[in-house]
Image (cartoon, rainbow, N blue to C red; front, side, top):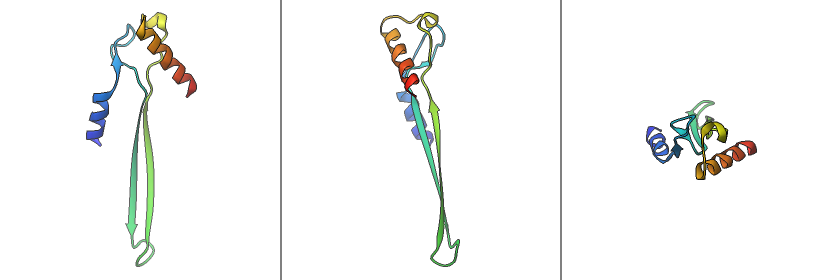
Length: 88
């Protein structure tokens, strides 16, 4: 798990704004899935299985352009992030 988290962190897109020095510029979803299989739970040759999924979500920051001081490409990026958050 740690290996995959490090890979995700290395590929994460961040940028500095007046509001946040390490503002996330992309949405990230990490899904952890655990399966538990118990053998002989109901007699010989039988088994039971349980599974669970945990979603860890990091949404890119929503910032007002006037407050963040963004201009040009960074302002367009912020507008796209805000639009995508609206769609969620």
